[in-house]
Length: 135
View 1 (cartoon, rainbow, N blue to C red):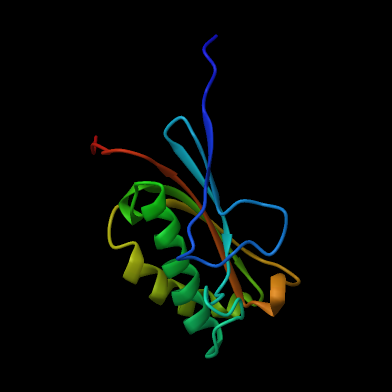
View 2: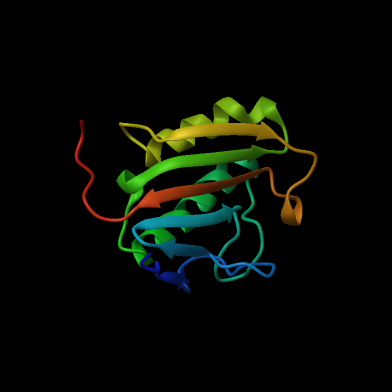
């Protein structure tokens, strides 16, 4: 059996991990992006403005990681959204649709008790490198 190559993806244009994990890991053509919260890459602090601004920043950070992996939002095939309050679901969706415009990825959304640094939202993703042809 041929071995697969594992490559760690990191970019200074996204927030630094706040624990022992990578921003993303590439295996073959699949990119596994760690959960992103609304941290400002320059300060390492949550952006002000609540769940709306945190969602924008989390997805902006994700976009920078996707770029570093040679991808963009059209390469994303699955996301998981973690919310501190499910009442924020519609607000997060409004922002989410600004980044994922069509052929939306598969997704799960959960309410959780707490998120790192007191964040209101965290989003992780799986993407596939290269052109994707519609069936």
